[in-house]
Image 1 (spheres, rainbow, N blue to C red):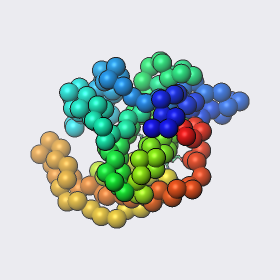
Image 2 (image 1 turned 30 degrees about the horizontal axis):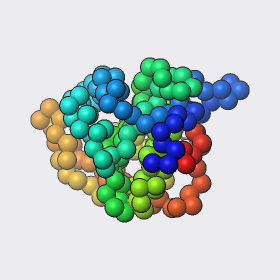
Image 3 (image 1 turned 30 degrees about the vertical axis):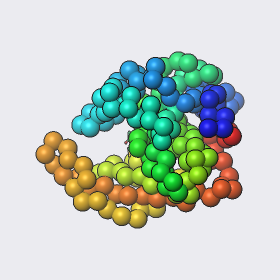
Image 4 (image 1 turned 180 degrees about the vertical axis):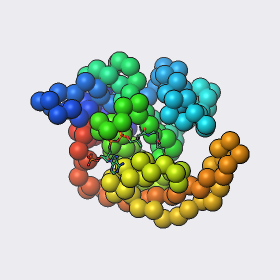
Length: 183
Ligand SMILES: CC(C)(COP(=O)(O)OP(=O)(O)OC[C@H]1O[C@@H](n2cnc3c(N)ncnc32)[C@H](O)[C@@H]1OP(=O)(O)O)[C@@H](O)C(=O)NCCC(=O)NCCS
């Protein structure tokens, strides 16, 4: 994981470019806060601390958090994680407590960089059909809809389709706006 062990600054907030948050790889010490954020962001399908520990500790996963402070040592603002599977990577989760500040985009860019470094050529993700905001964010980041999985989510007895989206991870892709490349 080239360079993934250090914090990278987040994007500025339009006031001189200074940022008050940064990204860093997630560790087991972050599980409690991520679990709390899961309950806020995904109340119907939150992962438990045990599930999160299995995810973050798995050798094929790469997890990142966004947190306050130049070294990302402060309060958790967001998190994301991927699974590496050969030429494919799968975005397992992404979420932020502070929407519209570029955190989601920065988390996604970190995941894409990790996927490239891990040998992936494509990133796949599943998103709930009724999550219009996330679908727009992914489309803005270059993802296109390639499939639909009927009834993939079951939320309080209601079946909701998943939209499968994909993006090619070109080796020479320019870094997305937001934090500088971690490599
Ligand atoms: C999806 C989510 C992670 C996006 O994070 P975010 O920090 O709000 O997104 P950003 O501020 O980084 O915006 C990303 C890009 O999408 C664009 N965008 C954001 N909302 C948009 C919308 N409704 N329509 C079109 N574009 C949109 C932004 O303009 C930005 O593009 P830019 O950098 O070129 O300006 C966030 O909304 C979230 O945590 N949602 C709740 C959890 C969730 O649903 N996760 C996804 C599960 S699949």
